[in-house]
Image (cartoon, rainbow, N blue to C red):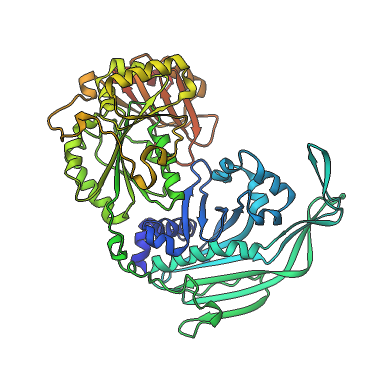
Length: 607
């Protein structure tokens, strides 16, 4: 079992039981989602990290139309073992019948226009966690064995009484939604949380290679929440109902919880398992065709992953489009792997995308320059470990895809080529096409062209840009987008079977050398920051960047904030957004005279 945990968690975590307990659920879910056939049979229908939040994740599970969320409540050491306690939330679909069982306030939140956007980053919103938390799960990690246990605690009925009633303001005036002393919420919390817990437990059995060897169930008298009058919110014994704790252990017994005073069931292997659990999804680690292999072919899944070559000039929004594409495919049970590289000595975009797929950064420098010739090796490693449905090769904004086409043509034994998708900045694209041969080559070779950031460009500028694009590429499909938001079916068709108009220069594999950023005298320069910076000095330094700078990005710490911030710059605009944990602080400057500009910028910001 220790060997299996080594494939789930970094070896250093195995010596840190508390952190191992914190990371284990995410590791179990991620590994279970590597293979579509496994994912489906374990009950997962899509998983996504909360990119901006505090380590939470969201997931869809078979049989539930809403979205589950998992977030950390606390973690502690228990006599050398690690214990992480996490909240399980359930966000019902606004049309789902179960939404009526939540409180009136929760129902109103579920009907709000920004509900789904907030759900994606629910860890940022205290009100969502308060309104929609349905259960708690304990994760125990014991270095002895090592052993793992999962324990779910939830009320059979989570009830809330409104002493003063609830009045809702409508277009026709106030409406008494709940009478004084009436029930504001009556939620079957245990039954709501069980599908998520059972998929998590089934993932544990699959990843450990065997089913649990211990099981326990206990309970305590239920409580209900009461609010109104002068007392605010308080808890009191419920007339009926109970709180139930259900636990499973692998290589360890499920630890007792002293708050659960009524033991109901205890089982340990090799005793016969109680008949009520016949058919439970976590009974065994064996999944037909996948018990000992990550090869989809053993499950009768023989199609090759589809390859998308994603390109676009600096700052066009490739990473934003890619993040949305991955989220969409995850919702459709598709697994996306990314091969990514950036010009410069440090990459950033992999940290911005999340962790529910693979990001492999290969070599330093620019895809199509230093990576040309080693792409097969990178893809061989990814395909053997992750078995994705899609592979996206995201090139740096200064890469000429022509330098990769002959190599891609030689990968047809591994991948099914799908598209060259090029993203353009609608506001700055015309300048890039005028000044840089690489940008023109990216357009010439595309079969899909996304005019992104159209909200920042007026109609005349868009028309002029489209005319220039058609001069370079008369056949590609053009789509106008904002924030890279466009359904993949509109681009590639259902099941990626849309016939794309491939430009003539693409059709024969192209050899030889084609223009790169070095032909445009564009380089990169790295600035490392060893201590926090003054925010205003940094802003002043950014404002003073010359026109020679085409792109800048990195991670910066400021003296007035505890958390690091991600820095993104394109000419005329920059953003600073919170970064949960980004490691070293640095800025990469890309453009002409990069080294000289980097030295001046370092001095300007007081580094």
